[in-house]
Length: 255
Image 1 (cartoon, one colour):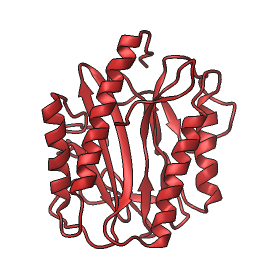
Image 2: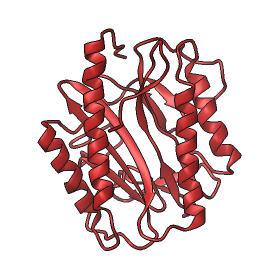
Image 3: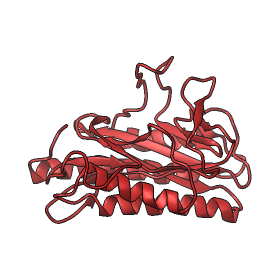
């Protein structure tokens, strides 16, 4: 993994993160009842283009995927957990929408995600989204020099399990720097005091995912990308790119 050694490099990552935050804000502003999911992707794409940033999502093709990813956003709706492909589906009143965005600017990556409700929110969905956000905040608080990866995993998982939610098996955060996905992996559940020790200059994407039904199982949709809950219950996803510094965690993907 890349460790940030200079203030200039940290500032460069911060600028990439700012573009991600701007793209997410634009996509969220575009979201409304009757709007197509593809329109959210277009809004984010316009922000990246204006900033001169590339998309680490567009054309991304891991070994397990049948085709390269065709968009700059992952947009996952209701029972879709992550990796939803933007298409012609139109958002309905009360839909839970998770949007995940990345950017590459001047050779540095940023990655973040947010979940929200379109139209009238159900109390159960508000609680689900709030829990994902609280789990992310707990993980960020644990991202301090001297702690270990397991401390972040434990912090995230404890919040999710206390709320009675499931955590998708095998999914979690990751290191980030010159590339979107770098070592180490950052699980969303684990034992404290285990794993790599955190050092000043490490940058991690911390990203809780929660399943309302309480189970951890999911399946891949026919498009080969979208991950959906097995029980049909709704899911939420929250993510920030966070630098571990001697002064405490620094969130890079904010406006």
